[in-house]
Amino acid sequence: MHKWLGLLLLVFSFSAKGQELNCTVKISFERITDANPQIFKTLERSLNDFVNNTKWTSRDFERNERIDCSMFINISAYSSNAFTATLQVQSSRPIFNSSYSSPVLNFNDKDFNFRYTEGENLYYNPNSYDSNLIAVIAFYANVIIGLDADSFQKNGGTTYYQAAQSLVSLASGGGAKGWSQQDGGNNNRYFLITDLMSNTYAPFRESLFEYHYGALDKMSDNQKEGKEKAVVALKTLAKVQNVRPNALLTRMFFDAKTDEIVAMFSGGPMMANADLIELLNRVSPLNSSKWNNIK
View 1 (cartoon, rainbow, N blue to C red):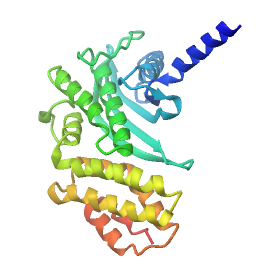
View 2 (view 1 turned 45 degrees about the vertical axis):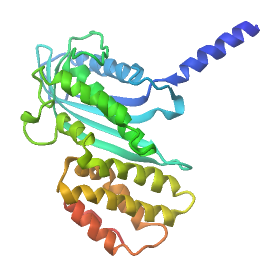
View 3 (view 1 turned 30 degrees about the vertical axis):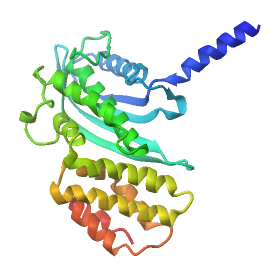
View 4 (view 1 turned 90 degrees about the vertical axis):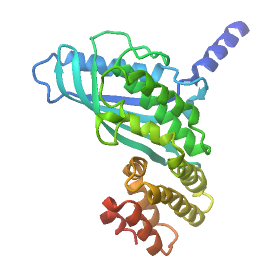
Protein backbone atom coordinates (compact mmCIF):
# COMPACT_ATOMS: atom_id res chain seq x y z
CA MET A 1 0.00 0.00 0.00
CA HIS A 2 2.77 2.40 0.96
CA LYS A 3 4.66 1.57 -2.26
CA TRP A 4 1.62 2.40 -4.38
CA LEU A 5 1.12 5.65 -2.48
CA GLY A 6 4.73 6.60 -3.04
CA LEU A 7 4.41 5.83 -6.75
CA LEU A 8 1.28 7.94 -7.05
CA LEU A 9 2.95 10.86 -5.29
CA LEU A 10 5.95 10.54 -7.61
CA VAL A 11 3.74 10.52 -10.69
CA PHE A 12 1.80 13.52 -9.39
CA SER A 13 4.99 15.46 -8.67
CA PHE A 14 6.08 15.04 -12.29
CA SER A 15 2.65 15.87 -13.70
CA ALA A 16 2.42 19.00 -11.57
CA LYS A 17 5.54 20.45 -13.13
CA GLY A 18 6.76 20.99 -16.65
CA GLN A 19 5.05 22.84 -19.44
CA GLU A 20 5.10 26.62 -19.37
CA LEU A 21 1.94 27.66 -21.19
CA ASN A 22 -1.77 27.46 -20.52
CA CYS A 23 -2.80 28.43 -24.02
CA THR A 24 -6.08 28.45 -25.90
CA VAL A 25 -5.72 28.13 -29.68
CA LYS A 26 -8.76 29.05 -31.78
CA ILE A 27 -9.08 28.88 -35.56
CA SER A 28 -11.58 30.89 -37.59
CA PHE A 29 -12.27 29.57 -41.10
CA GLU A 30 -15.56 31.28 -41.88
CA ARG A 31 -14.19 32.69 -45.14
CA ILE A 32 -13.39 29.20 -46.44
CA THR A 33 -16.49 27.67 -48.06
CA ASP A 34 -15.03 25.09 -50.43
CA ALA A 35 -13.11 22.83 -48.02
CA ASN A 36 -13.99 20.14 -45.51
CA PRO A 37 -14.18 21.95 -42.14
CA GLN A 38 -12.76 18.88 -40.41
CA ILE A 39 -9.20 19.79 -41.37
CA PHE A 40 -9.48 23.12 -39.52
CA LYS A 41 -10.92 21.44 -36.44
CA THR A 42 -8.15 18.83 -36.50
CA LEU A 43 -5.54 21.56 -36.86
CA GLU A 44 -7.04 23.43 -33.90
CA ARG A 45 -6.88 20.32 -31.69
CA SER A 46 -3.34 19.54 -32.82
CA LEU A 47 -2.13 23.06 -32.10
CA ASN A 48 -3.70 23.10 -28.64
CA ASP A 49 -1.93 19.85 -27.83
CA PHE A 50 1.32 21.08 -29.36
CA VAL A 51 1.45 24.41 -27.56
CA ASN A 52 0.38 23.12 -24.16
CA ASN A 53 2.29 19.84 -24.09
CA THR A 54 5.61 20.97 -25.55
CA LYS A 55 8.43 21.68 -23.11
CA TRP A 56 9.65 25.06 -24.39
CA THR A 57 12.40 25.70 -21.85
CA SER A 58 14.71 23.83 -19.50
CA ARG A 59 12.93 25.27 -16.47
CA ASP A 60 10.17 23.40 -14.62
CA PHE A 61 7.05 25.49 -14.14
CA GLU A 62 4.70 24.72 -11.28
CA ARG A 63 1.10 24.27 -12.39
CA ASN A 64 0.12 27.65 -10.93
CA GLU A 65 3.03 29.32 -12.78
CA ARG A 66 1.83 28.39 -16.25
CA ILE A 67 1.31 31.47 -18.39
CA ASP A 68 -2.22 32.19 -19.57
CA CYS A 69 -2.22 33.04 -23.25
CA SER A 70 -4.18 32.64 -26.47
CA MET A 71 -3.54 32.35 -30.19
CA PHE A 72 -6.31 33.24 -32.62
CA ILE A 73 -5.69 32.11 -36.20
CA ASN A 74 -7.86 33.64 -38.90
CA ILE A 75 -7.69 31.60 -42.11
CA SER A 76 -8.29 33.72 -45.23
CA ALA A 77 -7.33 31.19 -47.94
CA TYR A 78 -6.77 27.44 -48.19
CA SER A 79 -5.77 25.22 -51.09
CA SER A 80 -3.86 21.93 -51.35
CA ASN A 81 -2.78 21.99 -47.68
CA ALA A 82 -1.50 25.59 -47.99
CA PHE A 83 -2.96 28.10 -45.54
CA THR A 84 -2.96 31.89 -45.65
CA ALA A 85 -3.75 33.40 -42.27
CA THR A 86 -3.15 36.02 -39.62
CA LEU A 87 -2.27 35.28 -36.01
CA GLN A 88 -3.35 37.28 -32.96
CA VAL A 89 -1.24 36.43 -29.90
CA GLN A 90 -2.18 37.51 -26.39
CA SER A 91 -0.86 36.75 -22.92
CA SER A 92 -1.40 37.92 -19.36
CA ARG A 93 0.13 37.49 -15.94
CA PRO A 94 -1.47 37.40 -12.47
CA ILE A 95 -1.09 40.34 -10.11
CA PHE A 96 0.08 39.60 -6.59
CA ASN A 97 -2.62 39.32 -3.91
CA SER A 98 -5.47 39.82 -6.37
CA SER A 99 -7.70 37.93 -8.79
CA TYR A 100 -6.71 40.28 -11.60
CA SER A 101 -4.63 39.22 -14.61
CA SER A 102 -2.79 41.99 -16.39
CA PRO A 103 -2.49 41.84 -20.20
CA VAL A 104 1.16 41.68 -21.25
CA LEU A 105 1.11 40.92 -24.98
CA ASN A 106 -1.39 41.73 -27.71
CA PHE A 107 0.28 41.31 -31.10
CA ASN A 108 -1.07 40.74 -34.59
CA ASP A 109 1.08 38.79 -37.06
CA LYS A 110 -0.24 39.48 -40.55
CA ASP A 111 2.04 37.06 -42.42
CA PHE A 112 1.21 33.64 -41.03
CA ASN A 113 1.31 31.36 -44.08
CA PHE A 114 2.01 27.65 -43.69
CA ARG A 115 1.43 24.11 -44.94
CA TYR A 116 -0.32 21.43 -42.90
CA THR A 117 -1.48 17.92 -43.73
CA GLU A 118 -4.34 16.64 -41.61
CA GLY A 119 -3.07 14.31 -38.93
CA GLU A 120 0.62 15.17 -39.22
CA ASN A 121 2.66 15.20 -36.03
CA LEU A 122 3.83 18.57 -34.73
CA TYR A 123 7.22 18.42 -33.04
CA TYR A 124 9.46 21.27 -31.94
CA ASN A 125 13.17 20.98 -32.58
CA PRO A 126 14.88 24.23 -31.53
CA ASN A 127 17.83 23.46 -33.78
CA SER A 128 16.00 23.04 -37.10
CA TYR A 129 13.40 24.71 -39.28
CA ASP A 130 10.95 21.93 -40.09
CA SER A 131 7.85 23.90 -41.05
CA ASN A 132 6.63 27.47 -40.90
CA LEU A 133 3.66 26.41 -38.78
CA ILE A 134 5.88 24.97 -36.06
CA ALA A 135 8.44 27.79 -36.29
CA VAL A 136 5.91 30.61 -35.93
CA ILE A 137 4.11 28.99 -33.00
CA ALA A 138 7.43 28.20 -31.31
CA PHE A 139 8.62 31.77 -31.88
CA TYR A 140 5.63 33.27 -30.09
CA ALA A 141 5.76 30.67 -27.32
CA ASN A 142 9.28 31.85 -26.52
CA VAL A 143 8.33 35.53 -26.79
CA ILE A 144 5.39 34.98 -24.41
CA ILE A 145 7.66 33.27 -21.88
CA GLY A 146 10.31 35.98 -22.28
CA LEU A 147 7.90 38.86 -21.72
CA ASP A 148 6.44 37.10 -18.69
CA ALA A 149 9.92 36.57 -17.25
CA ASP A 150 10.81 40.23 -17.86
CA SER A 151 7.73 41.26 -15.87
CA PHE A 152 8.95 39.35 -12.79
CA GLN A 153 12.70 39.95 -12.99
CA LYS A 154 14.70 42.70 -14.66
CA ASN A 155 15.93 41.30 -18.00
CA GLY A 156 14.67 37.88 -16.94
CA GLY A 157 13.50 37.01 -20.45
CA THR A 158 16.85 37.10 -22.25
CA THR A 159 17.28 33.32 -22.57
CA TYR A 160 13.84 32.94 -24.13
CA TYR A 161 14.35 35.83 -26.53
CA GLN A 162 17.60 34.20 -27.63
CA ALA A 163 15.64 31.04 -28.46
CA ALA A 164 13.19 33.11 -30.51
CA GLN A 165 16.05 34.91 -32.24
CA SER A 166 17.59 31.55 -33.14
CA LEU A 167 14.31 30.57 -34.79
CA VAL A 168 14.45 33.75 -36.88
CA SER A 169 17.94 32.81 -38.07
CA LEU A 170 16.84 29.25 -38.93
CA ALA A 171 13.64 30.33 -40.67
CA SER A 172 14.97 33.30 -42.63
CA GLY A 173 16.12 31.08 -45.48
CA GLY A 174 12.85 29.17 -45.72
CA GLY A 175 11.11 31.69 -47.94
CA ALA A 176 8.11 32.35 -45.72
CA LYS A 177 7.20 35.96 -45.00
CA GLY A 178 7.71 37.61 -41.63
CA TRP A 179 11.22 36.38 -40.84
CA SER A 180 13.25 38.99 -42.72
CA GLN A 181 13.83 42.73 -42.58
CA GLN A 182 13.25 42.76 -46.34
CA ASP A 183 9.62 41.70 -45.95
CA GLY A 184 8.48 45.30 -45.65
CA GLY A 185 7.43 47.48 -42.74
CA ASN A 186 8.80 47.02 -39.25
CA ASN A 187 6.00 44.97 -37.72
CA ASN A 188 7.08 41.38 -38.25
CA ARG A 189 8.83 38.64 -36.28
CA TYR A 190 12.30 39.76 -37.37
CA PHE A 191 11.85 43.29 -36.04
CA LEU A 192 10.00 42.17 -32.92
CA ILE A 193 12.82 39.97 -31.64
CA THR A 194 15.59 42.23 -32.97
CA ASP A 195 14.12 45.13 -31.02
CA LEU A 196 13.62 43.06 -27.88
CA MET A 197 17.31 42.11 -27.97
CA SER A 198 18.58 45.60 -28.84
CA ASN A 199 20.16 47.89 -26.25
CA THR A 200 18.35 50.77 -27.93
CA TYR A 201 15.07 49.41 -26.60
CA ALA A 202 16.35 48.37 -23.16
CA PRO A 203 13.99 50.88 -21.46
CA PHE A 204 11.03 48.86 -22.80
CA ARG A 205 12.16 45.75 -20.93
CA GLU A 206 13.04 47.80 -17.85
CA SER A 207 9.58 49.35 -17.88
CA LEU A 208 7.92 45.91 -18.03
CA PHE A 209 9.58 44.99 -14.75
CA GLU A 210 8.89 48.36 -13.11
CA TYR A 211 5.26 48.41 -14.26
CA HIS A 212 4.31 44.87 -13.23
CA TYR A 213 6.56 43.88 -10.33
CA GLY A 214 7.28 47.37 -9.05
CA ALA A 215 3.81 48.88 -9.47
CA LEU A 216 0.92 46.46 -10.05
CA ASP A 217 2.20 43.81 -7.66
CA LYS A 218 2.37 46.47 -4.93
CA MET A 219 -1.18 47.74 -5.43
CA SER A 220 -2.66 45.49 -2.76
CA ASP A 221 -0.34 47.01 -0.13
CA ASN A 222 -0.53 50.67 -1.14
CA GLN A 223 -2.59 51.65 -4.16
CA LYS A 224 -1.36 55.24 -4.28
CA GLU A 225 2.27 54.16 -4.17
CA GLY A 226 1.56 51.54 -6.83
CA LYS A 227 0.10 54.19 -9.13
CA GLU A 228 3.08 56.45 -8.54
CA LYS A 229 5.45 53.64 -9.47
CA ALA A 230 3.39 52.96 -12.59
CA VAL A 231 4.03 56.57 -13.62
CA VAL A 232 7.76 55.96 -13.11
CA ALA A 233 7.53 52.90 -15.36
CA LEU A 234 5.73 54.88 -18.07
CA LYS A 235 8.45 57.54 -17.90
CA THR A 236 11.02 54.79 -18.40
CA LEU A 237 9.11 53.57 -21.45
CA ALA A 238 9.03 57.14 -22.77
CA LYS A 239 12.83 56.96 -23.17
CA VAL A 240 12.22 54.71 -26.18
CA GLN A 241 9.99 57.37 -27.73
CA ASN A 242 12.77 59.91 -27.33
CA VAL A 243 15.13 57.92 -29.57
CA ARG A 244 12.68 55.90 -31.72
CA PRO A 245 9.30 57.62 -32.13
CA ASN A 246 6.39 55.26 -32.82
CA ALA A 247 8.58 52.21 -32.13
CA LEU A 248 7.12 48.74 -32.54
CA LEU A 249 7.66 47.85 -28.88
CA THR A 250 6.01 51.06 -27.68
CA ARG A 251 2.97 50.35 -29.85
CA MET A 252 2.90 46.77 -28.62
CA PHE A 253 2.97 47.91 -24.99
CA PHE A 254 -0.01 50.19 -25.44
CA ASP A 255 -1.93 47.68 -27.55
CA ALA A 256 -1.96 45.56 -24.40
CA LYS A 257 -2.09 48.23 -21.71
CA THR A 258 -4.17 51.23 -22.81
CA ASP A 259 -7.49 50.22 -21.22
CA GLU A 260 -5.73 49.04 -18.08
CA ILE A 261 -3.88 52.35 -17.68
CA VAL A 262 -7.08 54.35 -18.13
CA ALA A 263 -8.87 52.23 -15.54
CA MET A 264 -5.94 52.41 -13.10
CA PHE A 265 -5.70 56.19 -13.09
CA SER A 266 -9.44 56.84 -13.26
CA GLY A 267 -10.20 55.15 -9.93
CA GLY A 268 -8.74 54.68 -6.47
CA PRO A 269 -6.72 57.33 -4.65
CA MET A 270 -6.85 60.62 -6.52
CA MET A 271 -3.69 61.93 -8.18
CA ALA A 272 -2.78 65.01 -10.19
CA ASN A 273 -2.88 63.43 -13.64
CA ALA A 274 -2.20 66.40 -15.92
CA ASP A 275 1.49 65.56 -16.37
CA LEU A 276 0.67 61.88 -16.85
CA ILE A 277 -1.88 62.63 -19.57
CA GLU A 278 0.63 64.89 -21.32
CA LEU A 279 3.20 62.09 -21.18
CA LEU A 280 0.77 59.50 -22.52
CA ASN A 281 -0.37 61.76 -25.36
CA ARG A 282 3.25 62.27 -26.35
CA VAL A 283 4.26 58.61 -26.19
CA SER A 284 1.06 57.13 -27.62
CA PRO A 285 -0.85 59.84 -29.50
CA LEU A 286 -3.04 57.29 -31.31
CA ASN A 287 -4.76 56.65 -27.98
CA SER A 288 -5.33 60.30 -27.12
CA SER A 289 -9.12 59.91 -27.06
CA LYS A 290 -8.73 57.30 -24.31
CA TRP A 291 -6.14 59.26 -22.35
CA ASN A 292 -8.55 62.17 -22.19
CA ASN A 293 -10.94 59.92 -20.23
CA ILE A 294 -8.51 59.85 -17.32
CA LYS A 295 -9.89 62.16 -14.64
